[in-house]
Image (cartoon, rainbow, N blue to C red; front, side, top):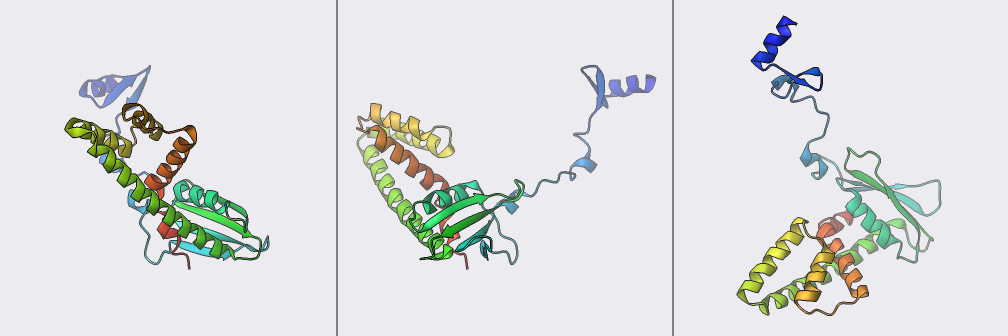
Length: 215
């Protein structure tokens, strides 16, 4: 008891809610005990590691399992949703085997007229074309709005755009600001389409071309 009192006076022990807790946060021998992977391992391929690999699924006909390394729900959910729009695709779904590893498995089943790989490549090409068109149209409309606002308006508009990019403002808030302050006529359908395309463009434009590297 006397030893604990001396250690507490020296600052080595900290009393909290009726028990004594040792201060470990200053100890250097415990800094490397975490089993969390390095941050760069979530998006940088290792030596000899491929971005995408294909494996035939023998349980069902005309189906394959594509494994995407260093990718997560962003690319997986987008590919799954767009593959289901293809009339030749019967099933499309993905899963992440383990949350600590940045990898997902995409399963595709077709009707036999095209292979799963052909369906995936066509989906990726359509997505790239769609995102390029949206990027061009979005940039054009953004610059036209800035030209009609004046100096103070452009400064406020740039600040708003920076908040959107950083994620502190949602896209619906931005659309509401456009509709009220800039007198933009947007109905609910246009708003939903813009929100959908903006999400795909802002989150997934980097990931889509990588999916086309599948051998």
